[in-house]
Length: 127
Image (cartoon, rainbow, N blue to C red; front, side, top):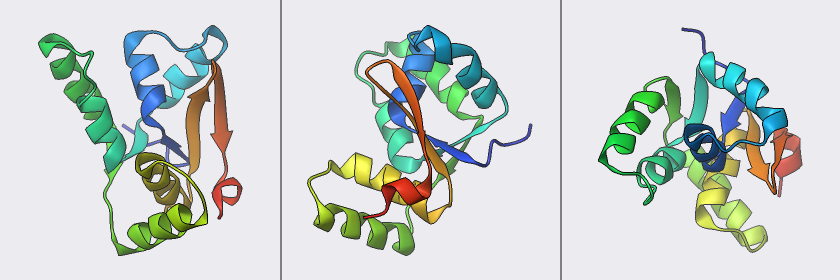
């Protein structure tokens, strides 16, 4: 299965997709992107599989779902970028990790904010 190498999916996209609660206009596009394989940060894997509203069955299905993902681990380059992002302004650590992972991997971030799916290029997340 080919990987969608241009995007890094934020945790909220994974949760909304998995729960069937993506905004209607975005559902088909996101489904197609995810069907081809997808990139996530290791922090998204932790957040997604640790989502407290999943029961035992959902956790098993979530783990199977993530088998299609390329999970990008932390490395020194990403950690250094996380530190730069955190020092530049008030941002939650998971968001800084996802942003730094996308930036250092030359990927666009796909996330959902107030029912709008947004795709940011790495030039949009420089700090």
